[in-house]
Image (cartoon, rainbow, N blue to C red; front, side, top):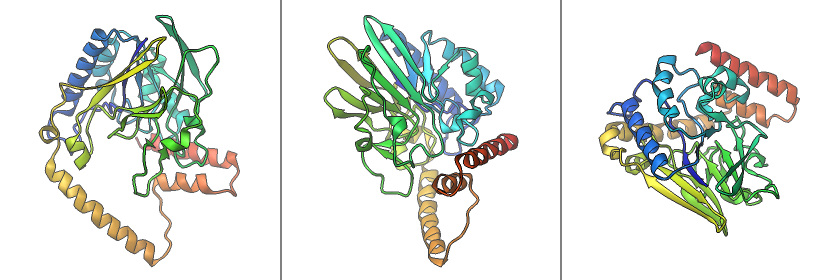
Length: 325
């Protein structure tokens, strides 16, 4: 059984301000190359780690440009919803999104909470489970969505999660989950997206791995993106064991050819100024912020609110974001 893994395609019709090339054309070239890898390696199916689209309401004209490319893979595409695929980081909004439309039309197959698929090929029986992004996926003390209980009647188990899984702490104030925190999982491979830089292949135990090949696009003006070459992974599962290999994309140009270096330098300057400003504000007293992420974090941390109240608030935030879009 052979599986191709990719993540964070961020399909969009415009070019990000940090790019100096034609973003859409570059993405199409990468997808065409990936199609050839699928054919040459005789891949059975594709796993996509989420953020197929850059926003949930991507224009139909843009989506139609990419639908045929996805169909041309000619193998099933299993995917979990990323934060950019949803309104308000709310998985219940999926049916109203472009990813939901592709799921309903059979172009991709979305894995939702608690769902699993049993896939059989070449004498191998695989248990596939997935979890979409949601607002407190990586802020909870219990990383349950990263944990999988392996069935006794399968050869391998794979968990596909759009979450911020890391091999070591980042050293910045952001929610993430460490690989050390999910060692209780029985998944043979835990595959994640969301973290665009990726961490490649990390072995947790003998024949047990975490995998994030990184986004196949570069949209951020960061030094790490300047040096990174987008890649995919090909996983082969046999009765003797598994083999995971990373494949850099030949169609991916160097960072200096596609990213605006002046934006990278400007972002570094802005980030330092923002950090200084934030520190001065925190030192001056407590302020209430109205950013959506801040509101969702407050809801998650508030122990006095009933769960139904939290759910209603999240639903209203998602609806407001959808209406504004």
